[in-house]
Length: 405
Ligand SMILES: Cc1ncc(COP(=O)(O)O)c(C=O)c1O
Image 1 (tube, rainbow, N blue to C red):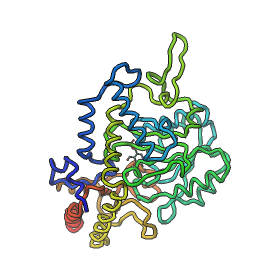
Image 2: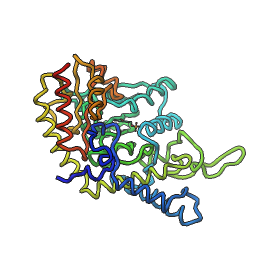
Image 3: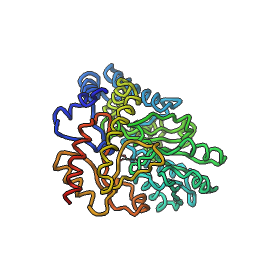
């Protein structure tokens, strides 16, 4: 098994740290860090309307980054890829643009699932307040999978948007979005299908054409790129009809004192100077995944770690419950623990004193936590650079805490 850890300088500089907070944000390999440094030292300049080669080179890397994303998600054209700042920003851009374009109006309904992250709830709640749209939530089944029959029942004629995560950041179940897509399309209704790929991008590839989604978004920092770079894929046909939520800078073709003309696609959805360095970091992060043998290598490593984690968990399973279903193993290998006799934030604090980084709280999925009557949980999220030794250290301290308290 390859030692991926040595590709990540942060672990050379902090060898004692066990980093299990990867679902919040991932560490960066030298390939990304050196790639950004090299770009800034050799090729950086502002892009668009260039008359000199530095700007040309900078723009060509910006566009190459979009080409790489296009390949990764199998979009039909790079102009369907827009850069935003993160997933939260992307969904706000979508919801506000739909409102501005009158594609969402009073009494139109948006269907979400009960496990959604706040990023895929709050922008809709804002529209509920502003223009009185309706919101409803699709249930999950006993294995935490998306309840497809509930989805089917809830597809009433007022539903205009179905917006679903691919992977829940609490249960870690992978939703059957191919099944959801088929139900949505076979209904024959004019429904926009949106996918939150934020927790899937670190672990597996997606095919937007196969899933036939209208929008898809993710955030770069969860897949080893910088923060403040996000991706928003929009199907070309929809893009042509949409009026962007924000206009300025590069989104504009010309401006007179009393009027302006919008620029073409995709620039009209990227107002102002974009995060060029972030775009290059995303290019490098996706190239890194290719260079290590694609997602298959990540999966291979994660499966090995998952088996080790579950073996260790056996010893403490009476004391702390995993939010987990044995009935379905169609999941990503992140572990969320629930304990009602001790506050998970206290466990996280003691783990932190032992240089073990985990996350405790509601993970920005409060409707689901309420639904399960949970206040706080503890999340240990593993990624490709973690090792069996990390897992051993985590359980050594975790077990001690559970025995002592
Ligand atoms: C499922 C899901 N969607 C959206 C987000 C929001 O990502 P960002 O904070 O980068 O906008 C997260 C972050 O944890 C997430 O887990």
